[in-house]
Structure formats: C-alpha cells, structure tokens
Length: 260
Length: 262
Ligand SMILES: Nc1ncnc2c1ncn2[C@@H]1O[C@H](COP(=O)(O)OP(=O)(O)OP(=O)(O)O)[C@@H](O)[C@H]1O
Ligand SMILES: [Mg+2]
Image (cartoon, rainbow over all chains, first blue to last red; front, side, top):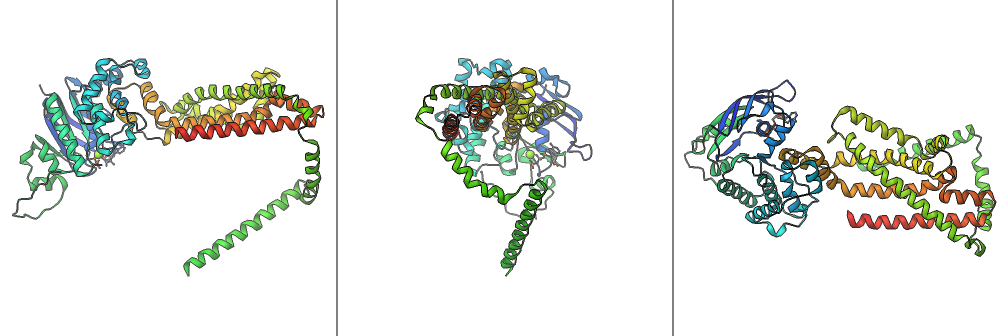
C-alpha cells in the first residue's frame, strides 16, 4: 500500500474559485517528488492539505492508512508528528538558539507541560546534535538563529523537521529565498538525508531544472489541476510549457541545465 | 519651480493652523472666563512663592527616614501592581490578539475589558474603589492594577499581532499544542517588547501611585498630603524632590535594562 493517497482532492478558500480540483496521485514510501507549477497554481495549498494545515473541502487525503480529513484534534496532532514541514522563510523563532529551535520538533510527542518546561530526554538532545552535525551546523548549536545565514537557518528548519522522525517531509519552496550556492547545499542535504533515513519527501519548487536534477518524479500543477505526473526525465520542454502556459520555440540545441 | 509652490503651500497651511489655534485658545478662554494675561501676570509671583517656601531645609531632612520608608513602600506597591497585572494581561493579550486568539467571543471580551479599564483614569478608579474597599493600601493597589491591566493588555495585543506568525505555523505543523506554541514561540518572540512595556508601566505606576496615595491615604502620597495639609511646605518640598529623584533613577535603570535586552 502506498504511504500517501490523494483522491479527488478539491479546495477553495472562498467558495468561488477552486484552488485545487480533482487532484489524484499516490506516493510510495521513499519517493522524492517535486511539485512544480506557476505562482498561484496551488502548490502550497496542496502541501498544506496533506497535514491539514488547511481544511480539505472535497475528496480525501489518506496518509499511512488514516483519512486525514476526518481526524479529531488528538489524532491530527499524532498525524502531524509523522509529517515534517520545511518552509521558504524557515519559520524559526529567531531569538531562540539553534538547538532550542531544533528541539521544537519534539513538541508533538510531549504533554503540554513537558513541552512548556522544556523537558527533553538525553536521547532527544543527542539526536538533535547528531542531525546538526549531519547538516554541518553543529558549531552554531548555541547561537541565536537570527545570527545565521539563510542557508544555515534553512538547515535548522530541516533538522527541526527531521527530529520529528517523520515518515514524510513536506518542503514548501525550501530554496526560494537562497542563493544558488546555498540552494545546492540545501537540496543535497535534503536528498541525501531523506534517502539515508528512508524518509519520503515532497518538495515544492520554482526551478524546473532543480526538480529534474533531484527528484525521482515530478508532479506538474496548473490552475489547481495535475497536468503532469511522471518520472523526472519524461518532463520535456513541451510538457513544461503546458504546466507553465508558456511557449518556447523549438530550439535544436539541448538546453544546458545548470545545476544550481 | 514645483518645489517652490509646494513650499508656499506648506507655509500657507502653517499660517492657517496657527490662526486657528489662536482662535480656539481665545474662544475657550472667553468661554471659561479664564484670563490668560492675568494668569501669566501671576506667574512670577507664584514662582517667587515656590522658591521661598518650597525649599528643603535641614530641619525637614530629619524626616527623610519616614519619607524613604513610604517611598519604598510606594515603589514596591507599584511594582507589585504591575507584575500581577502583567500576568492577567498576558492572558488577555493572547485572547484578544487576532493572530493567535482562539475565539472571536473571547477576543471581544478581552478587548472590552482592556478598553474599559484603560479609558477610565486611574484616579477615577481609585475613587470608585474607595467606596467599596475604604481607605487602605489594597484600594491603591487595585486602582493601579486595574489601570495597568487595561494598558498592558492593549500593548500586548499589538505586540503579539505585529510579531511574525511564521514560527506559529511551523510549530502547528509539528503537532505542538496551543499552549506550547504560545509559551515557546509567541512569548519568546515578543519578550523584549513585553519587558519594555512592563518597565514603562512600572514608571507610570510610580508616578500615578503618588496621586492615588493622596486619595487612598497610603504610601508617599499620604505623606505628601499630610505635610501639605499641615502647611509643612519644607516637608512637601522634600517629598517632591524624593519622588522626582526616585522616578528619574527608575527611568535610568529601566532604560539600561531596555538597552541590554533589545
Ligand atoms: N489563506 C488563503 N486565503 C485565501 N486565498 C488563498 C489563501 N492561500 C492561498 N490562496 C489562494 O489560493 C491560490 C493558490 O495559492 P497557493 O499559495 O497554493 O499557490 P502556490 O502554487 O503555492 O503559489 P506560489 O508559487 O506563489 O507560492 C492563490 O490564488 C491564492 O491567492
Ligand atoms: Mg506557495
């Protein structure tokens, strides 16, 4: 059985125009998937339907056997511990230290009191340092997050998602605010760590080249509908045009895909 | 060319504003029978009186221990009123904020409480509370407390709403509980401004406490009132000077704290 099934998913924020309609796809455990599409296509909305950060209007999202749309508050909390999320703007608490921000990823497993008192086990702390080490920012563990560069902050964001020990990580444009160099570091880390830990990964991206370089499979979204869903190398120029509604002249030269 | 015209226009507006102000001043003094010129004429005389009577003499310095005692009492009460008000205001602030509030109804309730306690002056609160609690320090404390709750709640709502909500979203996505999010993301993020407002409130309350003390018969306000009514103007002078010094010291101290935390 697949890890995630999205069935006939429909969503509208104001009952007028549909942001998503008839979205269907399945994700197997261990896949690395990119979602691409023009601005406003509904990529962020789609990701947020998976962990129900926004409510699902039509259809269903089945994650790990659970119908996400019907969960009660407690079950939803449990579900969210299994789903890590990485954001374009990192969404850290800037005034707190790196290690504190990473440990925030454990709140879903704790009682309110344990969380508020900041009671973390030795294991959890070790795990946090292990992840920071892996992401190459362990020397900044006690620095305040607002003293780090964007790329470093995003790595803190990734560590926070990974310490949840999630089954899947949802990344909403994780490199949109970063320079090419930092972007490459982030994508490399995402790819290698999720592969190593066997975590499924869905990444919203603006850069088609990056999507093609890193992901096994690409889902193309246009005006809330899936217009492409296939292994990455099948994403031809014409199909990219369909997704973005652009027209590229048939150029004979093979476009050199600069890795970011 | 264009710039000149703008400047000319600005000058014109300025003249109109000044004329209007003069007119309003004239009308209101006519309406209230207040003679500005007469008021101004008595100024020198008043100052002469102040400087000849309101002086700290050696004799009045003997009262210093009592005054200091009362001053400390007043300062401590102001701090107590502020800190306890802070706790309630934090709750109301979270409830009343648009970004992290839980329900519309609670939000309206919180903002209503805030505006009710803020829009009635502290002195009026003191008078109202005097009726039910009588002349004691509890009344003074409550008056300051109520006033502080109104002010702080309003300030905290703004601080919380202006702070970035992105970490809140991230913590929601990890499965954190509401209280965890408030305590571990919202409050830490807003802490410098929160502390800054608390310090401001303590300063304000020390100033207000004198006035409230005159009404409720407690603290330094009572001492002031006592000397004033017994025509001990040297004592009044000493009390005034000590209050001013205390307020300035507290202000310096809180400015220093602000610099460190911001
Ligand atoms: N909270 C919201 N309330 C109302 N409308 C919203 C909300 N969030 C998104 N929308 C609308 O839904 C549509 C899809 O938005 P979404 O953010 O999912 O697109 P996106 O593909 O992520 O775009 P981008 O690439 O710019 O991030 C947009 O038209 C947007 O205006
Ligand atoms: Mg988006």
